[in-house]
Image (cartoon, rainbow, N blue to C red; front, side, top):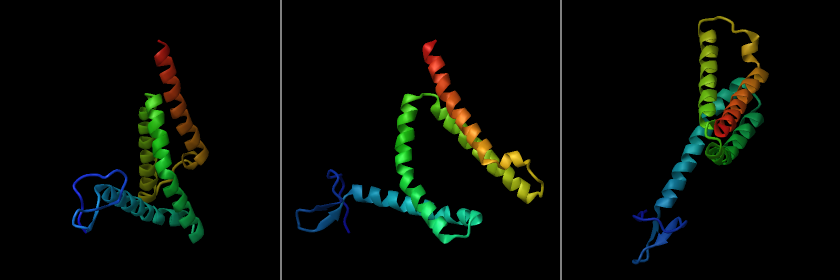
Length: 145
């Protein structure tokens, strides 16, 4: 199928002067985004099977995650514009999650036990909430000085 060189509003297809139908670059962008969503969705299924063997829970949690991903991006994008230091808080949270994953893998590979507190979802929630709260409060203090 031919593809036009320019966008035509939000149209996926454009009828050419010779009567044939051509795809627009907008269609290619949407297909690329959908393909990426599907690949990430399929990629996250095996780790969920490591937590539960119930296929309904695996597929439904994955579907909800995919449906919530795009709105969450726009929410965080808007919040980062409002709270200037939130991006540093997000970066720190991602680094801590990565470190936690590395420690858990190292513990599994080298057969040592992490303290139970490291596996606590409640502790993770407290740490993440504290980082975000500090990032927002730091902005307020920074703006008042």
